[in-house]
Amino acid sequence: MKHLFMVDNTTLTCDYQPMRTQLKINSAYLNYSVAVHAGSPWTFLRSLLKNNVLLIDSVIFSANQAEFFDFPEKAILSIDASEHFKTLAGVVRVLDFLVENALTKDKKLIIVGGGTLQETGAFASKIYKRGIQWIYFPTTLIAMSDSCIGGKAGINYAGAKNQLGVFSSPAAIHIFSDFLNTLPETQIRSGLGEILKSCIIGGDYFLNQYHYFFQRRAFTDLIMIALSIKKTVVEHDEFEKNHRRCLNYGHTFGHAIEILSDYKIPHGIAVVLGIQMANKFSYQQRLLSLDCMNKLNTLCESLISPTDHQHFRSIELSSMTPLFHQDKKTVDQHTHFVLIKKPGEIVYAVVDPLSLHSRGILQY
Image (tube, rainbow, N blue to C red; front, side, top):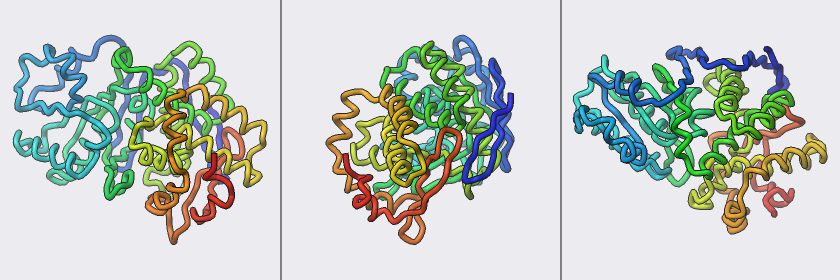
């Protein structure tokens, strides 16, 4: 089924097929596949480990250590994958691990974890020996539904999000929804935040699908919807020259919210709060109707907990301004904000961030 949506006055066509369990992503660097599997990942994962090395989230490793009893300890790097690992120091730690294992270009790095581990490991893979292949097993809903495709590998630097980055396509992505069974509800809501963002970009059909599958907690269906929308965008504009910027809907505000909350607000929830701010900006610019803004904001509210609101209210919103100036979408002191006319119609506004307070955007 083909569904149309608009980005910056360009029509994109999403080929979404319900019940699909595989996607092929076309990339200038390396075409790769996404496969959704039923059941436990461990037998399949172990089959890939021969002569390769493993970068894995420490929580997952501790809970499943018996699965690796016959795998050399030296070839496993278990990491506490907080946002603070997504730095140059984290990249160096992965590079040291690759060097210690004398990994050659015919071998692969297997990454098992969330988006933080993915981006750090992919960044290291890109620069080690001018590039080695990596295979990814995402273990969080946000990684399964968003960060796993698109090839972006960014790390934080100088107090700002994703200031250093490369494009690094995986050799393959394997999604096992069993990993979701052990996730805390906070991480589920965070992943749903990114899925909601994608569905708003995709338009009313996908928002209706979101509502249907959200009510049933049908995560595999939601994952494939979000990935189908993102595939459409990144294949059209892989290197973010223009249209891929739409995927930053809610992110310019959201990244600032993450940083100012000292990451107490999870990424996907910060994005949802950022979507509400972007919607307010869109309404003020007479792009978005009041009725549509209220409906979208109600969907957002369903994912935001009282604790999230408490952390958000503790932020001095005017402190966002210098963070906007560090944003990669800022040129000549003006930031490209992703705004919305309606679900399925994204537009951009180029604005001096210093004007946002007087516009009432940086106010509760």
